[in-house]
Image 1 (cartoon, helix red, strand yellow):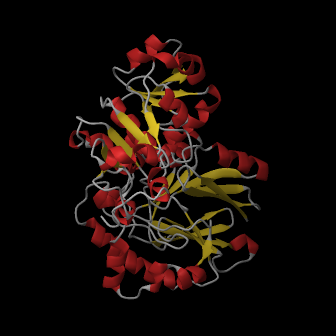
Image 2 (image 1 turned 30 degrees about the vertical axis):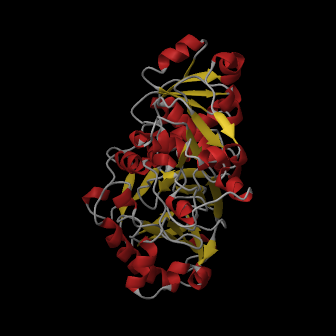
Length: 472
C-alpha cells in the first residue's frame, strides 16, 4: 500500500494519495484544486490515479474532485448522506458512485468503508481503510475529513454563521456528539488522518501534528473527554472563531461544481500605469508586495494583501468575487499567486502588473500610509486626536485592547466603513501590525484620507508599558 500526505500551508489543508502497489491504482482523498502534486507523486511511484473522493462538501477551499472527474476521467465516490441541500449537482455525465453509511468500495486491493459522521456538516463521511492485498482483515486507519482533528473536532456552526442557515449550529453539535460515540468504538491502534491542521478555521484548536491515533484522541482530545451531551454542546459552540465570509461561496461552488481550470480567463499583463488606472474603474487591484514597500508608495484605490502564508485566507475574506481582479506582483511569484487565488475560488483574475517595472519606479507620484510605533502615537491616542480601529478577532479583543478603540474584525471592515468617523485620523491596530496593514489599505482605498498603521500592534503597545483595557 502507498500512502502520501499533501499539505497546503496557505489553507492548512491536508489531502492524501492512496495507492495499491499490486494493481497500480490510486485514489485522491479531499483533493485540492491544484492537481499537479498528486500526478507528480503518482508518476514517481508508478501508480495511476483512477478515483477521487471527499469527506464532505468543503467550505474553505475549492475541491479538485470535479477537475479529476472531467479532465482525468477519475471515478468519483461522493456522499449521498444529508437532505437535498447537501447533494452534489455536477455529476451528470461523470463516472461516479454515491455512497452511504456502511458502503464499501475497492481501489485495487484496498478496501474503503464509509462511515457517516455528521456534525460539521450533514453529509460528512469518513473512510476506514483496510489493506486487503497486504493480508489485513481490519482497518489500519480512518480518513476523518473535518470530523476529528488532532486535538479538536470540526465546528458545527459554519452552516449558520457563514451560510445563514438558522438553527443549524445546535443541531450540528448534537449530531457531532452522536458521531463521536461511533468514533469511540473504533480500535485504539487505528491511525487518524484529518483534512486540516493548525490554522484552519474549521475548528478552534487544531493541533499542528499531521496525524494521530484513535487511542490518543480518546485520551487527550477535549471533545472526546466529555460524556454529557449538554456540556459537550455548550463547550463546542463556545468560542468558535469568526468564519471567513467566503466560506458560503466555497460551499456553493463545491456543491454546484467549480469551473475547470482551462475555462478560466487568460491573465493579461499591463504595460502602462494609465491602463492600470483605467482598470480600477471596474475591478480590484491587489498589491502583493510587503507592507513596507506598499506604505511608501501605491496606486490610489489599491488593496494590500501581502503574498505570504495567510494570502489565500485574506483574499477570500476581502476580494469581491463578482468583480475582475488585477494582481500587482513580481513575475516570478505570479503563478503561485494565481494558484492561491484559484484555491479559494477567485477565478476572475484578468490582469497582472509587474511591481518593479511600473510601480516602484513611480513612488514619488503614489499614495503613502504612515507607519508609526506605539510610543510615537500614544500621546495623540490618549488625547483623542486619532480614532483607533482594532481589527483583531473577538477572542483577542476580549483579552485586552487599547482604551476607546473601536472593534471591527478585519474580514468585515469593508462592510462597516460607515461606522468609522472620518473627521480625524484613523489608527488601525492588530496583534503585530500585519492585519492592520491590510485594514489600513482598505480604509485608504475607500477614501479615508489620513490612515495610520500601528507598527508592532498591541504586542508592542503593551511591551512599551502603555495602558490597555483588560477585558472587553
